[in-house]
Image (cartoon, rainbow, N blue to C red; front, side, top):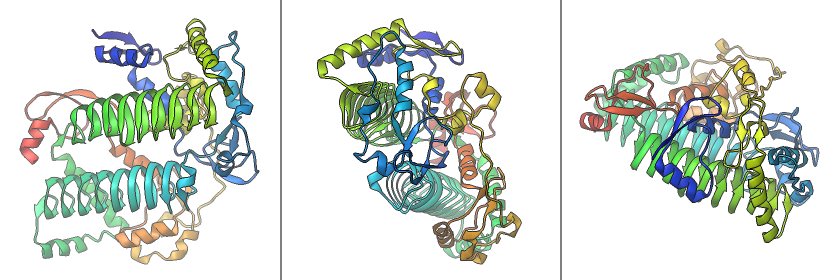
Length: 565
């Protein structure tokens, strides 16, 4: 039987279903006391994807790019130093003190142990210094949360991509620009929810199409413009007349296509190749519910940002995959990760990990931070197996009797993810700020930290109105110029590989900085929340990430299939 509880953070009611209790029993953990949305938000507060800083390594003194602002109290090592044998992770170890709260002691370990400056598969990167939460890349720049790419720039949530830029949720594709949610694409530009397409521009919900412009809800079509068919010769003539190499034309066409899309019904969920799933942006999954941006999940619930198979038996799991099983309330775990609980950062053959941060190739770890190739450790101190198991049991018992209570009276016993106070980043530096943006006042009201940005020392050298309208008029020396973002006003510049790709695409230079371009893409992606609505055609009840006040016409699966497939 289901049970209704009240979230400790937002005070909203949430349900725990019978199958949820079965999973918690299987994982030998108590049921949560925070709602699914607040659990997701808290995990994201421990993850900094895009806030990068210049700093110096605390071991070798060399310059580095870091996800920790220089004012943070932590030691931070550059990647060559962190992955080297020049330091011992166990030097920061503590003896557990039963008279002190366990999480307070974890805070102390945080200050003693060195963090890595970026979260990367360091040995798998070639000429890809400015990337984060990424691996197996070559010649890549400012890409995040992805694996396997070459010559890619300003991407996030991707796998197996080549010669592409400014795209989000992209898989197995090449020569793409401005794509949101696409797989198996070749030469696709400023399109959304597309797969197996070629030479497609400004289109949405397309499957198996080629040579289409401004279209929506088409399958296996060729030479269409705004859903109208043309001959090959007519199509090519009209495409040339559209003058897409011009920024002015680009803006007009972008606005026109988005308005056109609103007049055509949309399916209530983004999904394909699934069996018994719910959520949004769910692909190739089975028995997976309340999933958001997830692929290859079997027997899971409340999972997000999962990109690589296989993934099985997971609850409240955010980011990665690639051999992930029996994971609960954890983030950034994968690459053969099994039985991971309440942890941030566990990967590369890890097992039986609880309440840890950045443990790699390790097993049987509790409360450890920045440890590699160890086993039977608690608070970065190593024990023999029998001592470890006895002390682990005592700590779990102590957490029940002496829980961590933060300044807002939120209680953290065993069975909850790490307390907010242990998050190494300030709220507006973390990934939480992208999915759950709050004002400074709201953040501080919740007793979370706010990071005050330092004004850039860089000043614009070229006004946006002086940028060439057409990519045909762009000269190579433009890489020496500094621009002011049309949205946020921050300084930014273009790089030579970016110009080379835009010339291949015959598309104009952007006017926004990379972060604002990402923000614009994110605004086009439905949020991680479901609303109760009815199908606009048959009236059937549906749960959808399209909020009721949005202008799109929303159909259930049956009506969408009947009309468009």
